[in-house]
Amino acid sequence: MINLETPQKFGFLVNQAHQVATEIFRPNSRKYDRAEHSYPKELDMLAAVIDGMNESGALGGAGAGTVGGNASGERSAKADGNRNGTNMASLLGLIELCWGDVGLMLTMPRQGLGQAAIAAVANEEQLARFGGKWAAMAITEPEAGSDSAAIRTTARYDEDTDEWVLDGEKIFVTSGDRAELIVVWASLDRSKGRPAIKSFVVERENPGLKLDRLEHKLGIRASDTANFVLRDCRVPKENLLGSPEIDSKKGFSGVMQTFDNTRPMVAGMAIGVARACLEATREQLAQAGIEIDYDAPPHAQSAAASEFIAMESDWEAARLLTMEAAWMADNRKPNSLQASMAKAKAGRVGTDVALRCVALCGAVGYGEGELLEKWARDAKILDLFEGTQQIQLLIVARQLLGKTSAELK
Ligand SMILES: Cc1cc2nc3c(=O)[nH]c(=O)nc-3n(C[C@H](O)[C@H](O)[C@H](O)COP(=O)(O)OP(=O)(O)OC[C@H]3O[C@@H](n4cnc5c(N)ncnc54)[C@H](O)[C@@H]3O)c2cc1C
Image (cartoon, rainbow, N blue to C red; front, side, top):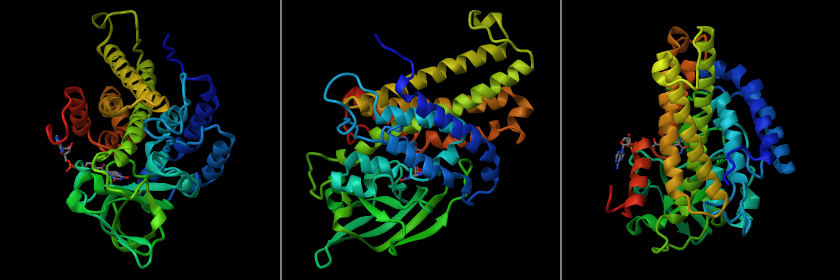
């Protein structure tokens, strides 16, 4: 029988994440929304907490924003049985943290979506070298957003020095300024298309990696978003993640495994912020004397109450899809379809719920006295990065219809 309760062993993790969200994130939310680009120093103390949790195994070896094991769960699932592993642990932690603040969660030390890329394709030596470090992920370029196969950044092997030499431009890199490592996608041979795209770990201090500018944004202002130019950026041979072979049979699968891991996590972020909106709205409705009756049909209660119930059920559907996608990753089940379904559903629910809550709460929802208006701004990015709403629907359609990316664009 399906058990939809939170796995008991993650109770400690969920409580800790909720405490961080309540005691550190929420009190600093507005401050760093206003002070864009200033580093939230209150988060420094979290580095030690995260290290402790990782060492004790409380995070299952993966902190929030970090996922362990690849999409087929090779490092996170037992050979048999039903397992809730690092993906589920990360997801549950993220939901709590984003209930607190999405922007602050994205700029937590020791985290970063780059760790998902490392977990998905790194070998054991690389995992040992790069694990636990704050790693950003740099895929997007001025001419390559949704179509990540169109990237122009190149990687050339220098036989004299045994180094990879990266040249190109990367934009919209979350935590790009603050992370210790940047995982950069680059092509070994642009004439060979997708299979030639590999990921490389670049130290943030590498002199070939020049920060061009930081973006000013609608939401998640606590999180820095950096643009870089890579010129003669040299990294050791061993910093290419996975195999340097260009295997046309494997296509894009190596780097794409990253998304199977990260999309359920981004969906979880949307679940977290939407829950915050629903809770705040429920309080406002209660203060206004509006009762929510789950046993009454929509026509037998106020419009606000029935809208609230409809939002909650939509939220629950998104949550369950997201849990399924993370559970599949933990249990060695290919989850590309479910990861995209979860991201599409939760991304849309996150923005819809947040904006509808702003509307339901009227002046309180729109004003800066409460955080609802900020959450509505923060939620939008979760329907954009790691693949937009439209791209997730395209992936779902391809999978259901059995079409390739060339057949259905
Ligand atoms: C705050 C922020 C943080 C980010 N962080 C990172 C990061 O850490 N690392 C990173 O690599 N990138 C990051 N990104 C980039 C993000 O992933 C891209 O913005 C996103 O993939 C969309 O790419 P684009 O902006 O170039 O839009 P485009 O690809 O130009 O798309 C524009 C619009 O067209 C739609 N569209 C495109 N193609 C199709 C199609 N075939 N069918 C239907 N509709 C289509 C899109 O859905 C979108 O609505 C970040 C972006 C932002 C804003």
